[in-house]
Image (cartoon, rainbow, N blue to C red; front, side, top):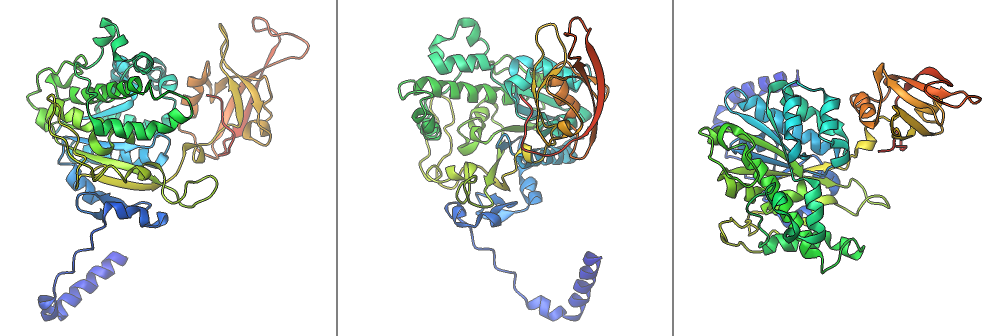
Length: 472
């Protein structure tokens, strides 16, 4: 109603004061907001704002996407455990699909899955395996661990629309090995799994990594001497993911062996890819974006989600937090030319940390995800079900009558054999939802042997958001 009234007033005003409108001047453009001045803006005024780095002004989501949609690759960098960052990623992917899904091949590339498990992701997108099977076969909960519910909407959209989902990360075993003993320690077979080119020569990138991980040296996680190996593992990580991004633009859009550039697909320029990844991999472009551009020659837009603390105090950093603290010191350095065939990152003036900065409040998954209020242990060999180590006093499980040593065997009539089953059974639950839990409880006088001495008990509990966490 308000829009209708305003529109009517505008028409009347235009007709009545026609001469006045004819002689009025266009409003002055807003005063540019310098990147360095963002830290002076009160945190509460930054939240939910989007900053266009090149134009030095705040824009709407639609304005950002009107430009980003022109790129072949759109990076959306996250803080892994911030719920709002994943909502932005899903909104970007949905916008790309809604606008271009009928005319372009679209893919979603995800840091959360490692390259050797691509086949299982393909099977899931094609409907050949279930969600629990995909999560188990990709070893999601051991190789990534961040709550699946944050990424599920993006993958569900891809599955519903038949979009390619690319497992872009490097095998964890290899990155861990390089961190300890360097690239030189890799076997010939291990090298075959990696890109031919792993660039470790970029001084700006090395300085950035050193400054970001300097606290790890202080904490004794590695030494100044071993930093070379650590940096090599970071470059291996970046180049492997960049190569994965590039794979979508190769012939037939198939994931070619790592490091093998392959022929560009005839329709490569018409393809579009949304890349969801940790913000540290795209900030200042010298991680994944420029390494992927060297491999594809495709243009890209980088969107960096930035956490902002709403208040200061013991549990929150002063002023702005997260990657915002990294905005100063790297945006006004110098630009390096092409070296050894690689485009060096455009760190120089006017480029900044990304094309767009999306500021959000700090919202962690534990503040939104309902819990049962139990500590659980994984099943031992040849057994199924999750044993309750503790039913937190006052929590949903304790209120429902569950006890220590109860073994959860079903949730809403879905069999539970391990933690993956439980997480999948609860992934779409909300606070206040009722959940039927079936447990086996040992009779005190009879030991549990081959199923004897057990009673089965069903209880209904109401999920709550609380501080207690299930064991991972």
